[in-house]
Image (cartoon, rainbow, N blue to C red; front, side, top):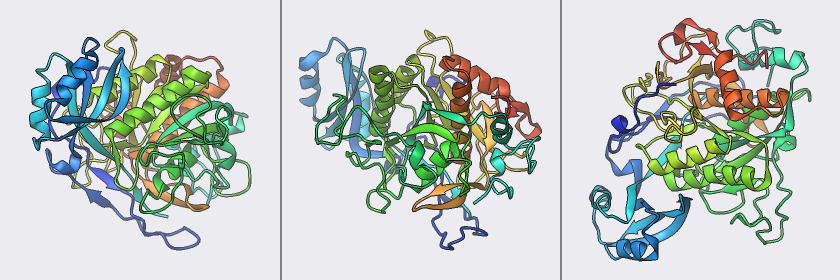
Length: 469
């Protein structure tokens, strides 16, 4: 896709306004709850967009230990190594001399030991909450024109199920989000249990994460991917996203995901205070390493979050994943403070705006940007769009899925549209063993059914249709 040049969209402090989940659901039936739009806007350039007093510094390959020491001698202290790019470290560093983030990044850009320096942006998820469920039409996003009940604007997953296509646990999706309630009765059988790292306090597989049983919590630095509390993160959003990808179907309870069978792995990086660029990079690289180290068939990561400005470090990580054959499926974003969607062609929304072709060397873009539609096929009022920078629409209004603890509810947002597409990638991979990431991407794009509301609003002009997967 011909995305707008990322360099031309680099605006200091640019942030995607998040429509945050309202947590007012208290009825035991989880039905007929009120939709509440809770918006939070950060002022461009304000500290609320980033971790104040921190920068991410990518060193050149030639810098070596001496180059790092030189930078540290200029009022910076290394907090951690986030990643390695082309043999050189990307470090999270603390400013110790009181200078502003902008001044430090500007000065470092002229340092011969530094490839780039940037803020450690803060990201948030995007959802609006509301109210189990296929047979009564509640799960409209799984319906299609040939299902019972009918909803032409659903994803058509029900037709795929009717053809016997319900997914495979040999296909993996990484959920980069909040954590997942892995004991939820509609999720437990489809959440990854790491066979390579026994729970013994030892990093048996040598990936740097001790006892990463169901994934890793990058926000809090431990292996507890479900916290379910205000201090470490409630994990409602990540659990909801996971249910759309892979809630167990045909079990007579709750909901069904696009895949009845799939393996989801948690890369929790959104905690109680959102998530940072540094933790997002580590989460992306975690899945790339799992695929390369163990050969896991990780076909995609699902990314229902956004915020901050352009990050070369995050783009590099997404490209590493793309080179390993992992799609990065991302929410287009939920508009501005007025709750009306923005045009991503003119106002960048990261990470969905990244064009990840690895400098053109890969030849195809591993990012799929997703807009939200409602059950009538209309572009959701809050959904961002972009004829060049957003690829496809998917159900994203009043989407019912799994929630902690062992409950269900409906959320709205491009956050809810994104896992429909992530689930679609997994479903296609299950019926086309050996398909490459590019072939899976092409199939998703080719599936798009022309939808009037998406004409001129997405590059395909259409909505996801997995009925033929």
